[in-house]
Image (cartoon, rainbow, N blue to C red; front, side, top):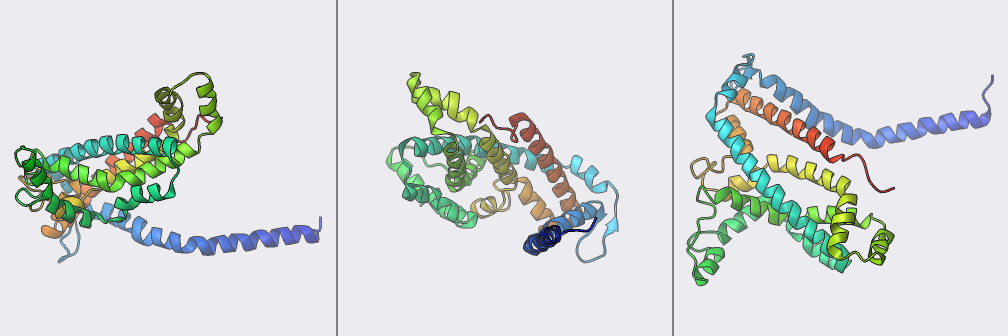
Length: 303
């Protein structure tokens, strides 16, 4: 059957739209291929080699992975990282949820939202340096306040007991505002008549939070948790700037990313560092899949 003019125009418009879409997608796709996909594939290959930048990569099979399994420093770094993740995620999620609920229930001020977001505009390096001064054992204002209140000074960033909780709380301070705004946006998507109906039935604020806000916020909360867990496992710059030496004191802050960096650029063991990076990628992939399934992040209870 011969095509009509309308059909030809529709097909021509579809091709033009597809070409225009390809033009817009091309820069992002190029960046993905060059800066994400290729380094990932290259890292997976190097994890099976001995490579130190000075000589060509030499195939080593599973030697790097066997070494990783028998490496007590690797397992110690993983334990330190998990401790940091649990503290950071636990405190940040609860604090962000409280801030988001308060902003929704009490005020819609754009100025307040800007103030809440302000710490996120500070880089991790700057935040680490500032809190290194604040928490300094001798001259830091934090310890000065403790001394004025009659408490003993605490080596927040120089003791094995306090260093990871301190680093975690530094990053909570920086990221909690951003996380709160994501949750606030999810709360704003909940229809207001749901809360009005609950008030008519005599429900108070606490009951509405547990019975309405939290269940209906679940998809957004699930995505936020996935994002924050992945980001927490990749902590590096705050630890590198704020702690004493690489991973000090006594490897108490030697998170996995720091150990990978030290193995690659401190000892030039790029094959071994790549193997640990692949292991971290596998761990994060499994955790993300489990979180997505358990929290049903792709589903919503809003009708």
